[in-house]
Amino acid sequence: MLTVQVFAVFFVIALAGIPLYYAMIATTAGIVYFKDLPYQLDSLFLNLIAGVEPFILIAVPLFIFAGELLSQGGVGKRIVAFARVLFGWLPGGMGVVTIVSCLLFGGVSGSAIADTAAIGSLVAPTMKDKGYHPDFTAALLSVAGTLALLMPLSIPFLVFAFVSGASMRILSMSGVIPGMICALALAIVCVRYGKKTGCDNGSERASLKEIWVVTKDAGPALLMPVIIVGGIWTGTFTPTEAAAIAVVYGLLVSLFLYKDLKFRHLPALALKAFQTSASVLLVIGATGVLSWLLTAEMVAVQLAEWIQSLVSHPWQFLLLLNIVLLLLGIFIEPLPAMLLTAPLFLPMAQALGIDLILMGVIMVMNLSIALYTPPVGGTLFVAAKLCKASIGGMSKHIIPLMGMNIVVLFMTTYIPWLSKALPRFLFGVG
Amino acid sequence: MSTAEHSVADKPHVLLPCGPVQAWPIHLLARLIDWALVVAAFVMITLVFFNVCAHAFGKDLAETTEACELLMVWVSFLGGASIIRRSGHMTITEFIDKLEGKSRLVADFFVQVFALVILAILFWNGLIIVENNWGNILTVLGIPMSIQYMPLAIASGAGMVFVVYDLFQILCGKSREERYGVDE
Image (cartoon, rainbow over all chains, first blue to last red; front, side, top):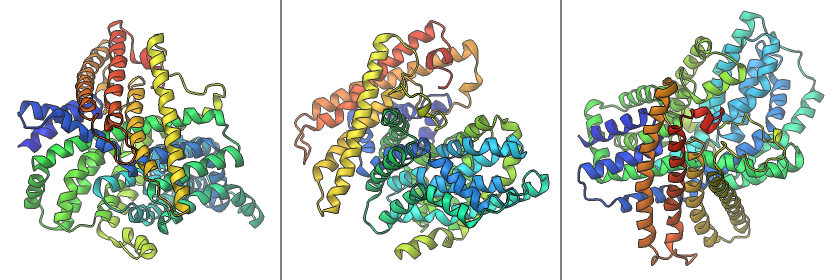
């Protein structure tokens, strides 16, 4: 009964346009007050502070700041140039270049919105000149930008690791193969689009010399994920330390090597990054307060028992999880959706013997789809704005791209090898 | 939320963006919070990187870890206060955005009254937490835990000022575009 009350109160408040941070605090305080539960509010709010202080969470603002530094520091254009000499010759080549650029840039930014905005602003004019329809370009960008969430420095993975207690080291590698399969699936759609419309039959193949020159220029940017992932892989750094190294590396590359940034730009970038992270962290903290109440009142256990009475096999639970998250994602942004659902789904998954790492990958893949599901979504809006496209026009182009991603999502759900192979190969676990 | 599409390189003379145009006391408070946030952020980055360097020499400095956790609480809550002024908290706006003109102003008024009540609860309980923890000392840094817990009350108090000012603007009939600027 309390479960229904908590969710009903929260969703009514949140859907009324109250910021999620306040909605969660209000739900917790309201339930405690009106149900006369024996908890002091000041003790409950200590969980709000405890929710934002853990050392591992420092990685969130630091990775966001590193992403900002690289987005503004000229890394994007070098990555696009690199992808272009490698894949520009394919039919639908600029589309493939966009996907590869998003995949590589996602490896340094970890943010889907930053990925879409940074790569989109570079490729959209060229795609327009080649004759790609702006609606298709925007649809492709909104989908390809979300590949960042499956790459090793993914911020949702970091948040999931914190919420679930899963190893960030293993989690960071588990999205790579599904991410690459998604990229391949999207590339097939682009090649088909290029051939069908005849707008882009591919440019001439680049010579080895051209490839070398562009690779050398993009090298420092491409090296960052290698250093970070290598450090985490060998156990040299924790994720938080890796984030600090990413910031320092981003500063060195942007200020001294590419020289696209100046020292005077840093305060504004830091402010933006820490404001963005604060909006995420306070929701994490408020979720901590609500989760504490739900745990103390045994709500999660009761809900897990109820779900277990409905589903008896892990495959049924995973199907239910995918459907719930895809539907939830239509209305709620990925991180809040994850923070809301993870504390409820995790005990059930553990009761059914489902691996935490697999859960993390499935949740992040679902929620990345939410970013471009019409009518609302973070990358959907950014891409529409960049390409001056309409959401309605984009929708028909999004359907085949989304279809491909849903196929990969179900492959990842029911073939655990896809998420486990790389961590197992690198760490011998997973 | 914010995106990377506005290049800072386009604004070479602005160290920190000013945000929406507001009365000078509000602007002053906001600038104070923004700069405190930036300074705390750079100190935190430096400390974490310093710890990485110490690790390279086989040392682990517990002081930096505890100081970073303390700063993390400060930057989270100060960041939260900073984005109140820019209407930047994560919100499900799909339904409220359908409202226009006067009905949107009325909805904004009720949202801000709700926010004010929650911030007041947080402010009051934040003060109780600070009051109760002067005697408890952080293990390594040896300073009262109240310093770590203080930003809840401070940021909620600052947030209340921004929300009251916004309510005043709403009562004056100013639209969201006028209050937050077109990009917000």
